Amino acid sequence: MIKFDVSRKWTVLVPSGLDAVQPAGADLRRILGLFRAQAGLSLKEPPVQDSSAPIDSSIPIIALNGEPGSSANGFSWRFGIDRIEICGASERGLCNGIYDFLAALGVSWPKPGQEILPKPRPDHPAEYPLRAASAYQSTAKDPGRLRRLVFTGETPLPRREEFLVWAARNRIDALVLPFTEKPRFPFPVGLGGKPGRARESLLGLAKQYALSVEIGGWGLGRMISRRLFIKKDIFRMEGGKRIRNYNFCPTNPDTIALLRTEARKRFGEYPDTLVFHLWPDRNAEHLWCSCPSCRAFSREEQNRIAVNTAADVLTETSPEAKISYYENYENTGDPGANPNEVSPRPNMFRLRFLPGQEGAEKAGIFLAEPRE
Image (cartoon, rainbow, N blue to C red; front, side, top):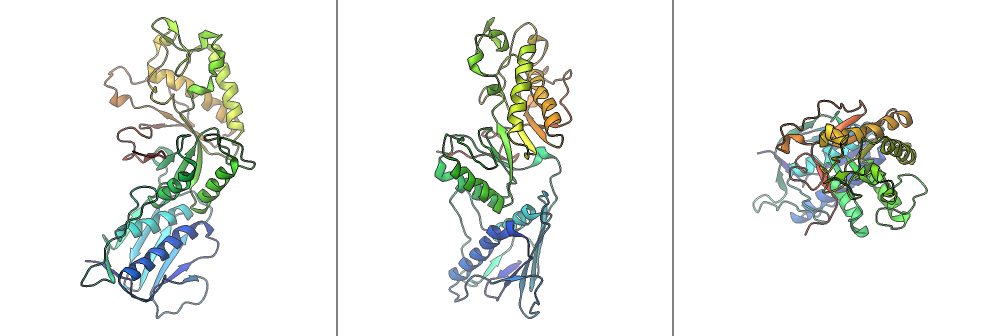
């Protein structure tokens, strides 16, 4: 069994310039201090030393290293008797590596605000077993495979930062904020109508943990204002009647024009955002139009038509940005659901699960809403 001895006088080496690793590095030192307290040792938290300074070769070290400025999330760590190396392909990758190492020691964060430490062994209270001597995770290059925490207006203001810290410790890489959020100064009212100061604090904390900030969510249906119901043809048909609730008629030329205008406005409010999400109305993701024109397309194809329209605008406003769309026709049981006629645009990527759905967390999509 591989054992980590907390009674040794470990020193944490941190390279200068890695500001985003400070909270994760502080967690590492704090938890090692708690381990020592559980073992009844007089040692406190391990000290920190700049890795560019001369190092005493007689002391065991925990060396942290990462590439500043990169958006990669891969990491590796390896354990040695006198040296532990935790490396990240970026600042976020280094944070992931630190928390994976702590998880290998038995530390867990099952829900926001909760931290569980392994109990010391009665016979050797200063020795904590590791699940392995090393670990490696490659960078997720497919944006659809990133782990995300999705915020909605349902999350109570005092708990948002708890959710964020929980996400960082559980190796989640990106936050998804609704379109009402603006991750730049000044921060207007949004996400439940609360003052912008709370959002400024949330975004500042995300920066400390090197978490990416993405925009969107269940906002596709709301891009067509329900106040326009006087022009009924832009709304979806159900049972031979036009109805205003849930999504819209994506094949109507007036709908397309309105979508382009609204997409240009919304994307323009977030010029530095590299990932947007446009999903149909929540809990109505498969409710689309049955008018004569739309009946030629499956519901998946109708969704693609709508998101394609926004993606074309995004190509014009932010050529490097991407946009996600939701589609999981494999699980609908409809053999004709596979959309063969409408191809997604090159700047789109598919999500097979949305937060809150069965299988979403396994796929790395989490919902920042309190659970009963």
